Image 1: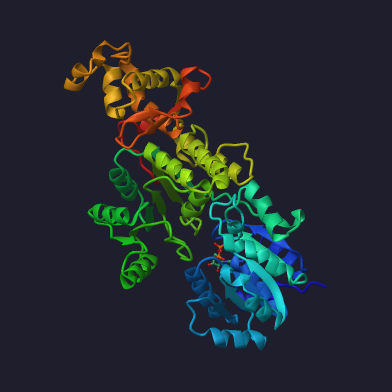
Image 2 (image 1 turned 90 degrees about the vertical axis):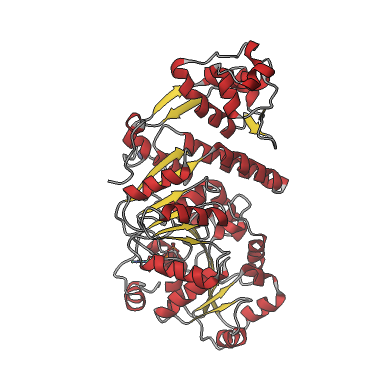
Length: 512
Ligand code: ADP
Ligand code: ZN
């Protein structure tokens, strides 16, 4: 007989009911079955092991990748009266925690994955009864996941030493490939997979190419009252943005790991307490923060993956009220990402490339953004969402293959030496000293673009860079990439999405 979890749910946690798949996950865990729970951020993953840890005999060992996150969870668990401890290099009271574990006085023991490898630790675990292994952020075990951590590979052998202890793996971020990899790596059967719905219907997704990013984000802020997060890619960028955006009059702060810890903590605490603050942060910000009323998340550049995008935008609108997620991307983001892929181990490059291509498809689509997002997480929607920029604005998709071929020809004929601006001048036939000196005005591509097509040149350049048909060399000159030939030979077409008509020229409101 499996005991009824509802009385404990209400007595310990004060919740009247489970949310979504929590109930199924908890039931499997209480039945002693190995389980992988895939649930979006904010769905309440922690409860799936915390609740059984209170009900079951013995200690639940929780593996979590980030010490800071662990301490947040420790505080939250202790706050509801769960007996918990962390065992990390940052803990001064390790001896005390070990003694409590041995005496059977702990419901939860949080550990970092690198502990798992030591024989010492295995002996420790053998010295008292265990109720459950809970593996948080389980995608870290997979090389297909976006955040592979080799230490996670040590967990299976550790758990195998305790074959009767049930296993619960949890993640918010797993495409189908990563999911089956997690199951295999952690020895969880296929039927142990429980996936919850990923849709966040109250979040409106909008994605645009960068034009003047600071101005674009200032527009998002102006149109969206309430607290918001702006994600930037570097520490310096968070500070610059915070300064520029703060001029709007909205309280604005920066947050990154390089700040003085006191200032950082204060900025975070002030943000959590605020009803209108904008925080400009690196992506580490938001993990473990429980702020339900974030009204917008703006990305000042391309996220690392669709998973990362989903997770970061998922920090908006947790209270269920309308929220906006606006992403601004540039061709240079894709170039940089490609460069990074070149630097990872060869056997991981294919996965990284697939991930980048998925992001490319998301930002370039003329279709419903939510459908693409949900499809990525294995949910097939047959209807458009009506709550993304494309659904709301019906963008124009045009076949720009001809313009793309002209652009590539101009790059080639001018010797693969010049940047977008100059190539555009050549195509438009705008005479300059340089074009005279170089004799470019007699080229067949000189001035072959005019009229309405002129507006396509810059978007085409961006699309070619995104596809790796063009690359930027160290001097800023454009060179052919591997995708150039198929376009020139007309084996591949270049479809372009132009912004919705009503947004052109005028300013589009982001929230309503
Ligand atoms: P995740 O780890 O999936 O991002 P958390 O475990 O941090 O999510 O939970 C998110 C929030 O949801 C927390 O504030 C938690 O207290 C709350 N929560 C979890 N389960 C329930 C429930 N059954 N009913 C109401 N609130 C819940
Ligand atoms: Zn849509």
